[in-house]
Image (cartoon, rainbow, N blue to C red; front, top):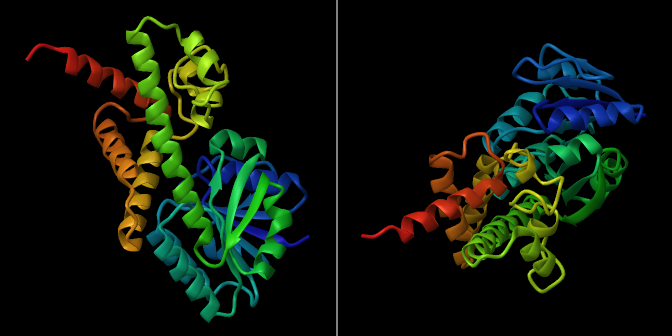
Length: 296
């Protein structure tokens, strides 16, 4: 089995690295912040130390600039033909810049962002959206399968990031729509369960409703039942919606609902969304409804 390096052991990276170790791989991990011990993962003092002797390097970092800078800094420490797999969610331009850096160094690469949140990372049920060559994808696939249940090769460099931001724009818009429907149902005297029972088996059915319902009760595993403790934080949804709008502007795509969703989450994040799941946006919908109902 190849030796693996995993750079970025935060809420997502740590369980992903642990799943690779659980699958029998030698995994060396590094994070800029102190992290607790991970079963089977050898923590190193630097990213360079983690990469030395590794055949495949995974990164899970906050933003495009971190991915580009980190990758550039690791090139002198990586062995020839090391495969770099970036699982961060970043802008398409930075993903393509990273691919170009690695291509110049004759190293294969994938951008492979994930969907499934911290629960999926821990359970090993993530969805991976990969961009890069067929050869790089084939080499990485067995490792991605140790961390996820759905692995999709979306195309060439940057295609994984493109798929991720388009998907999450749908998610952000649909969660707002589901939240608005539940608030309207409340105003009209419908119970949460009645609303769910109808919409979940009718044309309003969607993932935001049936898997991540924003009200407590109908879907016991949704964050609404744990005071919106995040599986996918509102701040991360806002990041992805902003990435989608940057991409839309660059590509000349009209995304009115995506832009409105970004504005709604931006107001929510500026208010009381700190530490809350993105499904807590229903709180903002209720607050706006109360405000609109107040006499002028």
